[in-house]
Length: 77
Image (tube, rainbow, N blue to C red):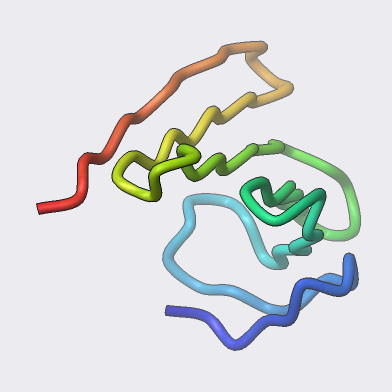
């Protein structure tokens, strides 16, 4: 858990690979955009989407170097 607000401003983080800061932005009621940076440079982005019924969360991660995209899907128990 990291102290951050959904205001688009970078907040310091530890334990996320090379990332030293994370910025969160609320896109809409079900979607959040995440930007990870190192030394002020963007190294990855992510999008978190909650399904309409609230039972599924999908997180899509995109790294820049090397360029790669992965997705994780979580079901509410």
